Image (cartoon, rainbow, N blue to C red; front, side, top):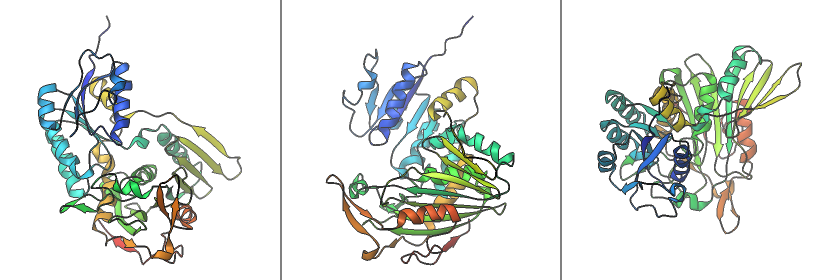
Length: 391
């Protein structure tokens, strides 16, 4: 005798901007009968065109600006939160009070204190939270860990990550909180390492096996900005783990040419490179030719549904983000990002989209991931002395 499981009602909080990707994913899972879009929490209701992926529904999703009211009226089992960083904790706790479970967009919070308030409050309410680090759903992660555990590249010497992205000046005007460290006295911490390239940080920590807060012994930060913003757009960090390992991440939004971000595990007899947006892995080791594989990926909302309906293990619970949040806290408490001098960057124009470019930064980012060194140690003339924060 087969058992039919009713689709779980979902409310999406924040359906524009990056939220459009969540909306499309909910539409995909709704077609598979796993979820049902019960509500959309937005200041301005979505138009019929924006809800085109949900054509033919017998019951249109409720819409409104008040998450508390939407949850009371819809009885949603899941809330997807894709709102400004500084709103995450309060919205997560609102959802948990209604007995709803969470897919919470990264970064989960702008400070370690807010992260703990969120995670502890959700747990005390009996709800579960999945944090939206999609790369941690890649099947490449356990595959790389297995290779490392089997000694394929010898003794691990460190983990590096590189992210060279291009963002126009308009990117930092997309919302009032964009490019801000704080807004109206509230922490935001919308920097290159904590938001757009946060996956590089979290994935590097995951491949090192250092995901929990207690796995972090210290964090060194170098934060810079070429754009006219408050936060950082060109930065690097180096984490010292409680086991004595090193995880270094170099990133920029001012690249000369945009490239795929990657994480590399350095071993005594080889290396493993993981392009985490592509789920692509390259193994290079002594005495063997290069070997490349492409892996699948488990969608995090689908995994959350599986956790609630079948008891599947949750892939990215808050505890797995503790080390990442230690890095966020180090960035938050570091001295203000240093404005790069005018001769350290130049204007570029691409299709009427002006942006700022830091000449030579692409090579510096790659060198940071390769050598596990900071910009100042690589000889960047604009880089200042390292700031060290120990959680």
